[in-house]
Length: 403
Ligand SMILES: *Cc1c(COP(=O)(O)O)cnc(C)c1O
Image (cartoon, rainbow, N blue to C red; front, top):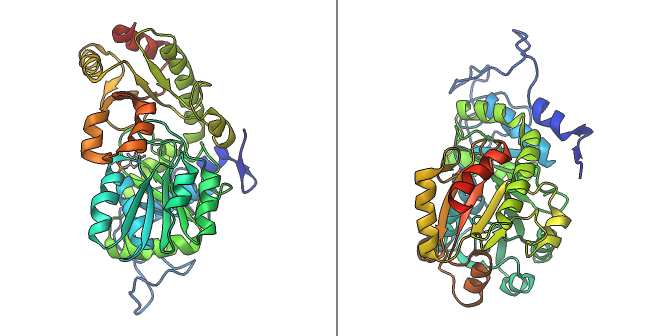
């Protein structure tokens, strides 16, 4: 599916949005502005509430040219009015919760989500007086049953880290809006190219820019895209008051990586498709979850809402003991794939995620919710982030331990 935003294709948008030749030097590439403050001709006026559209730069916690370039690129790709970049994906998630929730509010969070987000939702938000329901968002009846009169926000993640389970985003967005709540989606696995979030009704689109957006494993960052009113509110609260801003250098290097995002996503998808198909053909591999494979339990949702199925594969090799033994062989024998956490980089990364350990530290699921998790993950999965190497070389590396 080809997507276009604001009359330009997404490849052109990734390269040119938010930047242009330097008016004083003619430099074609963006300069790096390592300036914490900006000289002004205004005698006074120093408040978090000076956020007019064309306000001059004042102080880097409000805005910085490099951070604005990255924000413009992400909002142009997502087709939102604005975007706020922060120091990490976790800072972006925290910004959503702390801007749009107060003590006494209720929030529904995907019961499987990035571990840091799950822990924040389970431990920190209740301490601040919010009520949290952790819900399996692949079950629409469960989402609708969890809604209360004081539900202010539904926070989804699709595909979910680390098991690749999907949420019908348009359907959950409708449930949120019918209840007068906002809906946010952690779209890190999908990237801005993987789903048309605005068309599906997502109000706040969150990314760990450390992953696909930056794409090269050399900078940590986070982003939330949304309409100008919501993003202004977040900028005041989370950037200006809480202070977890993105550094100009990180914005500069992430924007540089982002120029090739659409190209990279096509290559990640093609590589992952080849590797996932190979994995499926191996006797040692007991299950493969990849949204581009017909065998994905929610393949119809992937077909309906994903415009790129990305590079994230989960696969199983049997019980925990076997998984841990194979993980050790990978550490010892892999020549290309790095055994490391994180994802979305040009280098392929793999990590073993044991179900019992994750339940204890992060997810704490029971009953039907635990069963749904186990249906995707068994006793544990290898989370493989397929990079941009030749698929044949990745398959040869995997073949050293799985063949
Ligand atoms: C990595 C990740 C995060 C956290 O991002 P950081 O940049 O590491 O803080 C949040 N959500 C998902 C889905 C992630 O993969």
